[in-house]
Image (cartoon, rainbow over all chains, first blue to last red; front, side, top):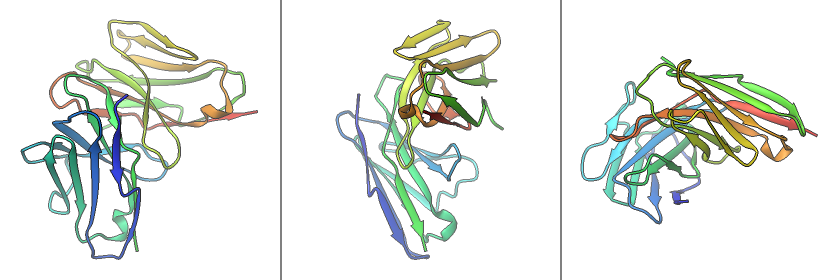
Length: 115
Length: 113
């Protein structure tokens, strides 16, 4: 199957700082990528849809100025958590479908801890 | 609004037994129903998927049963093993478009020796 990587796998930052998380499709091109947030023992909640070459689409209740998404190329999407606070601590996961297919390929996730 | 309802939220099965997880959906536009397996600290991985034109799909010890009229589908894990202990998510999506995946709440499966 296709491979999606995320970097970093975990990050600890101080409250008020910004953190960037990268999502890469390693062996296929992805015009669309998705960003999820998962709290402990909960399901994945879709935050936004990242579209290559255009603005991201955010789900209701997700602050677009706080969670900046940039889909710079067909293999890279980044999520920047700006002015992070402890309540932003979570497991962030990206996914990408292969163009023309239904199957979503998920990254390994990034554990963000904000002190 | 939870568009995909999943039960049970936790399940304990003895080694060699059958694990059964059930899901129901509301949106009849959904036409792709995957199941994902997630281990702690890892991203979800596709286990098996089905389309509504098929009533059953089997891959090894994993079987999806699909009831289109009832808008329900289920995952059966035969001969459950301790290595199957993980969280399982059912999901649904619509082909084409942006292919957003709607997840169920998840079932934490524990297979005991």
